[in-house]
Image 1 (cartoon, rainbow, N blue to C red):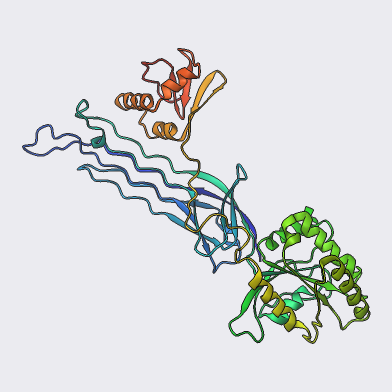
Image 2 (spheres, rainbow, N blue to C red; image 1 turned 90 degrees about the horizontal axis):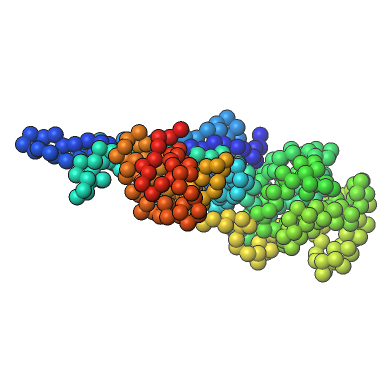
Length: 436
């Protein structure tokens, strides 16, 4: 079974809470705060694994949660960091945020990684808040919640060359003759319902090989999804060379020239760049009646339309003409750009979610809502039940310029302001209220 789409839920580990503790040792009066920091939560990381071929595993497991960080302890002992959760996906997997549709990562190379849910930062213990004016702080930070999101995974096969053509043009037979792949073959349309891959050794060239993909047959309207065409076409996006097979026998229901142009049109309508992709045209089924005349007309058309491009003739029954096609593919691959289409995110680059930026203030149902990565994190990590912690939070917001930004935005005195779970009445001296 070939699975090329999946939807999963990922949850990074929460950071561990900082500890509130004081030194209690003999002959050490007023030992001071000694609460340690909490450990950071583990992140969820996707890694491109070349040993995987489909997204089938994600049909049976859809939820992935990384371990949380351990809380801090007394004697300034920090909690253990939660281990990162490694989720292996096939090479060629595109990762999207299910809520926004934004592409988070394009894992087009083996070993490429993407952090799709970052672990929460561990909270600081009370020893970190000691100062000349606060000798014995009785509060610590809570751990930051880990990121959580739904993801859509889409697999686009990675192949050097892709076989395209109408149903029953001979693509599966071609792949079976030149590689060890054994796709299903029969004399009726749509025999091939899933893409197949095969490694092709180039005859007469020691060590020369390439990966060839057999894409299920395309029909008119494939770019819009007809015959599941849009699901198949995505696998052609990464191929560097197209091998276009055309049935030139009179037994084919479609004229060879029409068949050639119909497939070209569908490729261009799906992705304009495919029309400019290097193409090798192959006339197939030369052992059937009328094939000679069909091949001649196809050659004349391609020569006129594509500037003297060669049309290779192949008899799949006997294997005659296969070697020149494979040499042409290898030569074209050597000339093609050495870059797989896609994979814009470099290996090892992390996707960390939204970055801290300028504050955003909006009015929703009479309440002024402040958004910003830094201030929302500060609120989430504050123990809102502790009066000392609330005073410290107010001091931090003032230092960050939040109160100044509210004043500049024209927020009136006495207005309700919400930051994360914390809602308070806006005055310069307010200490806030408990969360709703």
